[in-house]
Amino acid sequence: MNLQKIQEKKGISPIIATLLLILIAIAAGVIVYAYVVGFIGSTTTGQASGTSNISIDAASGKASSSSVTAYIRNIGGSTAQVTAFYVLSSTGSIVAGGSFIGTGAVAGDSACTTLSAASGMACSLAPGATVSISVGSGITMTSGSTYQLKVTTADGSAVLYTFKAN
Image (cartoon, rainbow, N blue to C red; front, side, top):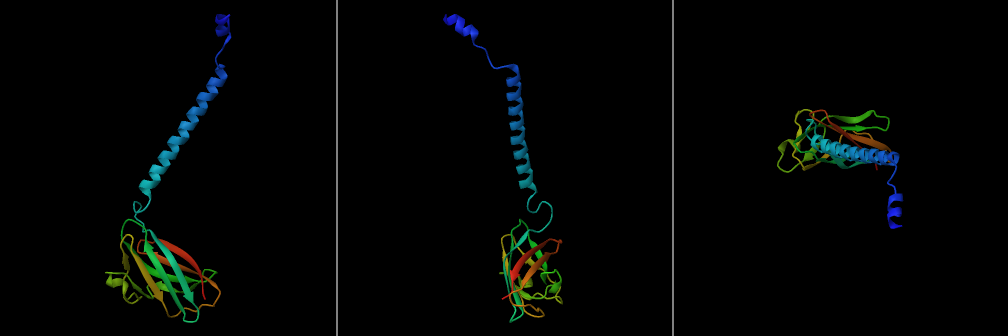
C-alpha cells in the first residue's frame, strides 16, 4: 500500500514548471537591470559630465531695503565658478541681475569679496564650500510677492530658488 501511494504522487505539471522558470528569469532580469542602472547612475552623477553642481540652501528678499541674500553651496566634486545672480519676477522677467551685481564672502577666496559686473570675476567654490551673496541695489520688489533667484556658473549650469519678499 505504501508503494502504491508513492507511485500515485505526481510532480508539478510541465506548464506550471515552465511558468515558474519564466517568472524566475524575469525577476532575475529586473534585479540585474536595477543594479546596472544604479551603478551607471552613481558613476555618471556629479562631475563626470563636466557640469557644476551647486545648490541654493536659502534665500530671502527684503522689499524695504531692496536686497536679496542667498547661501549657495557647491555639492559637486569639483570647483564651481559662480558667475551670475538673477532675481526673477513670478512671470519670469528679470527684476535684477547679470554678471555679478553683489558682494559675497567665502573663506580664502578674494574673488568672492567684491563681485561686480565691472570686475568680471567669478566666485570659486570648492567642493562643499558655501558662499553668502548679497545684492542690495537696483532691485524693486513688492512685499509678499513671490520671486525666483537664479544663480549660474561658468559652464552654463543654473539653479533656481523661489522665495517671498518680506
